[in-house]
Length: 186
Image (cartoon, rainbow, N blue to C red):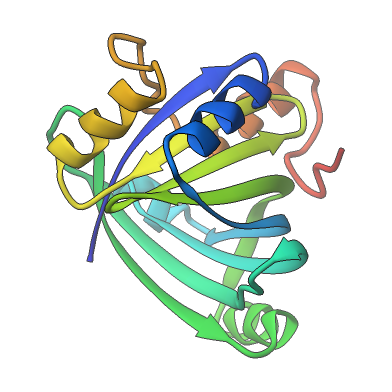
């Protein structure tokens, strides 16, 4: 599957939440995530622009979501962030992490993230907040036109989108603070 998304830094989510409601978007749920990013000791995945993540989810409101293991391939050219994504649900995130560590993957970054999920048309909209780096909105769709339409609806057309990942932004923030990007919490 190809992940196609636009990400924007925002000051708050209240205005966007109101626009989502006004546009008839469907609220899916609120979650607290724990994201663990893994790589080989030699950084082989990072070296090719890929990533491996185990995500644990705590449902705060709405529809429950399972823990997942996700592989993300290198970015492809395009107006928005565009990359291969392979994701599967797992029953036990801790066991999945243990399995990956036994085959010599190591944790490189681990962080919490608050996420509120909405659906509008063929797009998924995520209102995200991560420690050290702030608030964001991600709009994921199957085509650039779908994403552009949601951007128009939410008043984001013409705003500069961010191509950097949360992992990179958190790692850079931790580097600025002279700390390891492990167990980054609110």
